[in-house]
Image 1 (cartoon, helix red, strand yellow):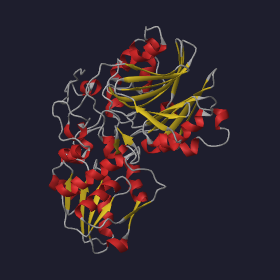
Image 2: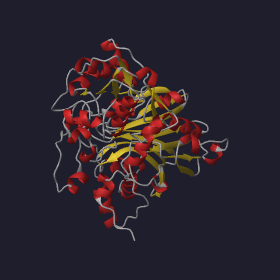
Image 3: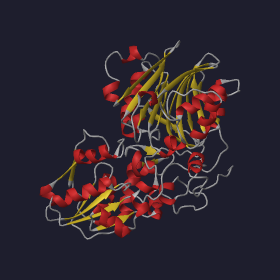
Length: 495
């Protein structure tokens, strides 16, 4: 017999808290094949499960798998398994516990007015409270995914039209999210829909490929199928694509946007454009500013591959130091940060990296990485470089110190697991085994993003992992912690 779910199961436990990739195509022959390609480009956003749903004009088709896209959606029969000119897809990353097929998206339901397949990237910060009320009212849940909460809200909405029911559901949820969905609407037309949270914490872009429209978490997934960038969906905006074309409605009042800064630090692929900024150029600029803020007397700059490469290039160019590949990465192993358990993370570090001993031996080296979260990977990297014969090992993080947990989809569920939240700089340096340690300042981060300064009243980004300044209500977290609310920036309407 299973005990009932608690808020800690759904929020503080990282089981359903995920950073994922979403993709959708409308109006393309063999849409599912394009979705599979797009998900492959978004594989870095989630490596544990994937799914595709399509609509062939009469009925929905939904196929979900545990594992990678390339292992799941292959073969010449893909268009027979998932026929139709409209399809959506999802890459899933659960941060701990079992990866279950029942939690894999897209989720599908027959609801009043038609069928709906839906997938989302992000995390709803009041999902447990809503779920608890729904269960009391008789709802039956088949998964532990917060996406299913939205299906129930849509189904129970008293609004007449399908889109209105969807918007009604969006207005009841809090957090950071980007949705894609297939909707067999009450007007007889199948619709591809997309939505972003009112602050734009999670990304969603629109592309065009001929007459077809594409929705994607990142622009690199548009490039994969040679789709042209059309626009970035605005925060709080809903897009509806059907036979009449593309239409936009605003689900929320307009407020100052707060896109997640961690997209630039870590999650987005460097060849993506996020918020009009080149991720590669921003990360390179972070390295340049880091070199000015935290210089080091060393022989060479070595990136921690692959995410630390752009910042290391910027650091080396700014400081005039040689940039060297002192760590060789095995590309057949996934990113350590996107693995479900600490045990697998530890194994992943040993599998992923090897030291270039002939280059390192007897040298003073500076390691540059994108960030330090738990410190597990960084400690092992430093030890590996020392074992390879380095005379000195210095470490630099191209982001500020991560001192606060995330509640919008990033794997930082508790303060106790964050290195910088529990140790000062001297202690962290000792724990990592480094000769020195340095972090980019919050001012340096904003400068790299092209901002003159951080607006303390209404910050330009969701930077809560560094500042503790949370942009939304954290209802589930507050309840779990006896009503103790973190610092918040309150929303204000803008013209």
